[in-house]
Amino acid sequence: MKAVLETWDLCYTYNGETLALNHVTVAFYKGERVAVLGNNGAGKSTFFSMLNGLRKPDSGGVKYNGAPIGYSRKELIGLRQKVGEVFQEADRQIIAATVEAEVSFGPMNLKLPREEAVRRTSGAIRYMNLDGYERRSPHCLSGGEKKRVSIAGVIAMEPEILLFDEPTASLDPYHIAQLEETLERMHREGRTLVISTHDVEFAYRWADRVLVFHQGRLAADGTPEQVFSNQELLKQACLKQPVLWQAAALLAERGLLAPEKGFPKTVKELSRLL
Image (cartoon, rainbow, N blue to C red; front, side):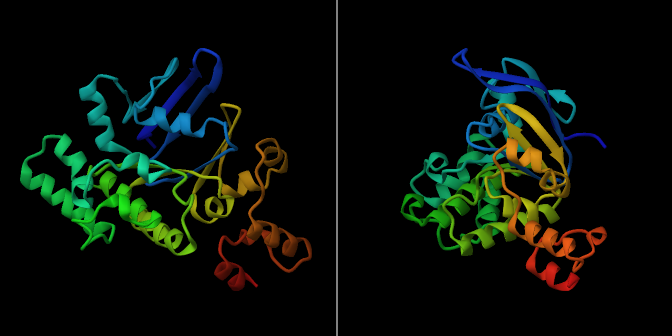
């Protein structure tokens, strides 16, 4: 299968002193759900900034659809139409005075025909259930609502790949559930989703594949089952096994669960297996 986005031998150093990425090679494929784990300072955010050209690597590089990305303004605008990023803090991303202006900023910046820009803006607002918010100031919205606005702004660019940096941070359970519904919809549409997170419970139940960063290196790349069964890796990367994984492993140890059937990823799945 051909990768839609990939890096090779990616290295990056801050101020010529702090090595943030150390020879990272990884590929992403159409329709994947990928969780990126690692403790603070592991290199996750720096890695994300490379994927859509916010930073230029010291060595190595990034390819989109098999072609190395360029760093001219025109090339970067083209890349960010296809590879969109939703930042951890919505306030870092929101710049406009109204929700409508915020969501339309990307399409307008592409100098699209007005009709196309309006179509994309209204479509993204509907997509994120923001009808009725168009004239409101995004800075006066709740954290969950701001997150929806920032996602709508990216959706309006109609990207094929979406990068989310800690999307569940500071959200309450209700808005986390809403976010997961949105992610599931995007997955059904065939988009490639890459999410940086500290939430191992979310990564376990959501991802098809898990990357683990440690001290700027890619320490692991595998299924959730492969990653969360590796105790040595988890200890090295300062990660914990998901609670549901621990519960299922204990039940399997006592003969109450058949491991060959796979470990459950939700309480409903656990109930069904029991």
